[in-house]
Length: 148
Image (tube, rainbow, N blue to C red; front, side, top):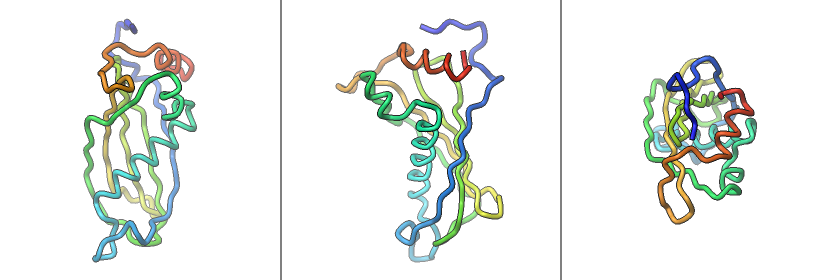
């Protein structure tokens, strides 16, 4: 178990930026990205972050854990449209608890903020039992990336 004097490390930020193009099937009858597809963009951001920092879903699964989402929130500022170029900035929010929190900012090609969001994932075993202590591999990952 991690024991710290401070609740979490506010001095180090882990971020990853992933670029994408809006696909036709992601838009609605109004020609704008349907709001539910932003959750898919968040997932794309998390997966790209995981590949970049060595904490992919496969890595987590190989250590015997799943990380289901227990909370999602989003705020929509501007629309994206078919064929727009955009990018998502995914930021890991450090926490002393056995969970992974990510914040997201999606921007259009003009660097205007389109959507913000946040997801929280917890650790479970493959039977769905909640893990309340920080898994050893996750603590080791945090050390490796400078969060501990």
